[in-house]
Image (cartoon, rainbow, N blue to C red):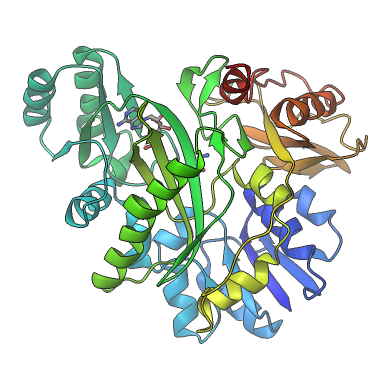
Length: 428
Ligand code: AMP
Ligand code: GLY
């Protein structure tokens, strides 16, 4: 099988490695990929941008790719799946219609209300004065979200009413998020522990991946500004077998049935960002129409099943009936190494040392890197994700940080407490 992966981040590096592990896969193209994917066996980077659907489809056709797997949300929300369908090419990822579950938070909220999926109560506003009245009536803490895609930067969890009103002002009036900010969703603050629950879906059923947990805030103890994710681990102990069953029964299966009933069958990775309340009730914080990043790096490091074959089955009519996923029973934990300044303006172009050191049961995934004069340099906010595999979260954590200690660049930064919630639980 020949597979094309669309995207260039750490998630796509993990997808490419996972797909390449299968004996049935002879070649993996990554468009455009990164220096990490370029170095993998069987993997070739292709210099095409993820938003040029014509060029991607014509490459897939010319090079006889049997399947294309789309990594990031932007091309999915813009309709890459529909374009590939129209060209008669197999593409794994939701249609433009289904990807709106990530592309528009107000759409996702209406969908959840219609299909009885638990999520925080909310209202949608285009008018700042009306939003302010609602916030003052509702009180804080309260959460303000730009409606459209905002690269993880469109959410403000406001501790007081003034902060929420200011966030609405920024989003609606100052036009900081462009199109994404023309509507805001204001929702109740949910209390609990977050978990990421990702499934592979064929339109009629969903097969869950191992659970995971991300650390979105930049600083230790889950403080500081929100980021795309500073580290993740799998499994997430907060997702007990009972919680797992509730997530499937109350959220994932109703979504699959609801999407089908609404005429937009959901095929692709489905990411449910959840809050698990102290009594074990799951509630949806957000849906994403793709795999999580950095969740993909630790979750896929544990996957033993043939991912490309499952993705192909999901879109070629065979379906996922009877499919189960096999897992390495060990835990995996990934630490994101970020450039100084991230998530605001960050440094670029710093030479990275230590990439060639090798430590068994660890893997360095590239996200924001480039090659300059033959050296790998930083080129993005989240630069690398270092994953360790171990008997439990503590062992995986210790190994990941051992590998992190061998990597350096100017003003490299990372959190030293990835996995702390799971470890607290283990201690009791
Ligand atoms: P999102 O981009 O929607 O995932 O939001 C980013 C982060 O904001 C989430 O990972 C949560 O930590 C936090 N957040 C979003 N919505 C809520 C909510 N209703 N209650 C509490 N925290 C939230
Ligand atoms: N790590 C969060 C996300 O992928 O949206």
